[in-house]
Length: 109
Image (tube, rainbow, N blue to C red):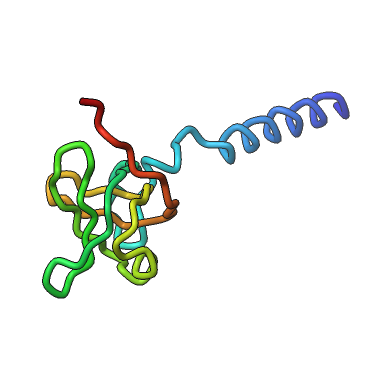
């Protein structure tokens, strides 16, 4: 009888452990409002003011990305940087998580 109780407790413990680990990744977890977070993207370009908004002019296509949290990148105005953060690609908006100054690349002629 003791073996049966011990075995049942062990099986229950294994099931609880497997349930607690879960299978969803942080990418799929909703934020506090219940919506899924957009994908993380890295964009390289120059930080500039466009009117009263701080933007990043993308090296790849010359388009501007509106920066959702400009306080993070304000001190990098006019510099060539690489910003990594959650990107709303359809709106060309990015929420910067990290900002690194990078050397500008020169095109070969």
